[in-house]
Image (cartoon, rainbow over all chains, first blue to last red):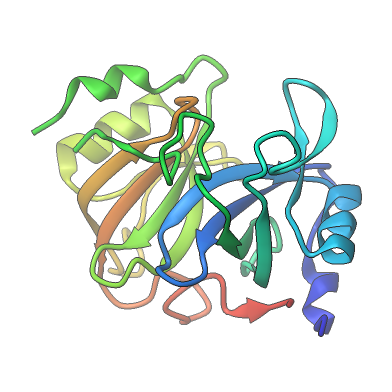
Length: 107
Length: 107
């Protein structure tokens, strides 16, 4: 069920970052960008769709790897300019094979 | 101790989003942007420094509210264009008084 909070997302600047979080463990898996069209496709399909800034096109995470992300919950922040997608992650979120893209510790 | 992975951060485009996560619970608290200068000030001070896009200046989270974020761990993603700050959050991360800025559920 989609809440009225959906109207709080501000797509006026075009792209909004989405933090993808493992639904079961809360681990941050990756960050990618959505525009209004990819957000609608995410709601319709139940899997994550993003806008690739380098390729300038929509992509469905898992379309080539099979590592789809099934969306369980979505949250918007206080400013309406960042999203959280809580997902069931198939396989690895990262193209390197790591479960999370954040596998390199700095501090 | 700062790992060599620090050199993997790509500041060439200027700003890098940092996902701020509660060190104890893994809850995503907020997202803000860092440039190279604010990142250095974060390492030096042990508290989070960001670059405000609306005010076009550096800010130290907590400087007015007292709700500082003490940085315990930092991670960089596979592309070098997103960071995670794992923090000990004093009080609320959100200016609304909510613990997390992501208090509005859409789905």
